[in-house]
Length: 308
Image (tube, rainbow, N blue to C red; front, side):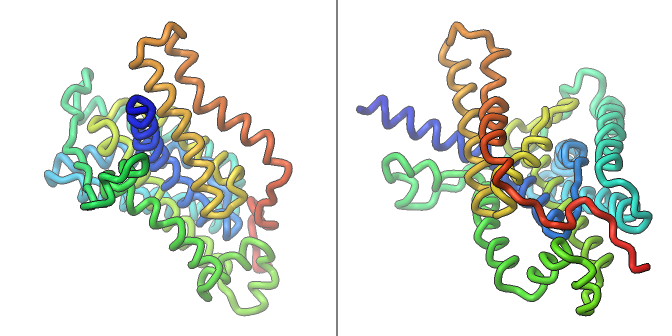
């Protein structure tokens, strides 16, 4: 029984921790998608956040300032993305893929220039767990109350965003722009400005997600360390049906797969580690293939809007 509780606590703690970067990125994506923007550049934005978080946390000597610096850099990337897809009405899919390629090369180059070829100098200050007295000692669910600060914030974002989109005037305007921008325009909503702002806000959270991956989970930056989590975040948005609560459930599914494969590797499993590393991605694909037909994106998703 004690072994079962210990295993359950380990998986729960690891699940929550591993799911957090994907959850934050997916919530950033849903802010954009609610206004009709599809950003395949999530992978690149997360990767830039991973690098800049390490750089700024080392520069300022603290992980929170590192995350803030990553978020600001993400907003700059979001501004450029918005200028291209909203201002110039370029294809959102092609633009996002182009951003991924450019940022992959940029971060690799900067990593070698700043931290050297070995990358050994790319270590950064890490977050320490914050235990909530009383709650952290509860059997089974105690690990949820002994997490790093960004993890708590990630989970608090879920009800906050759900309330924002359903109960606030700004949230309803964002949803109207994503569903029927022509009607929103007639009603006096500035469609272009709304999309600009959602892209910048969403990019902030996506970059912070990448930053937490580097200074929250690993305390180091390595080239291409996001390893597809940006695309997983997009799948999580679809699996979660563009709902913050659904996104939370989908992110926890991915996190559980990630936690399970790490436990199997450290437990001395005879299965090749390459196959074990596939577990979270296989789980996500299986879940997505079963639900994608039942999901409905915002009606104007991916479609440029012109006032003409």
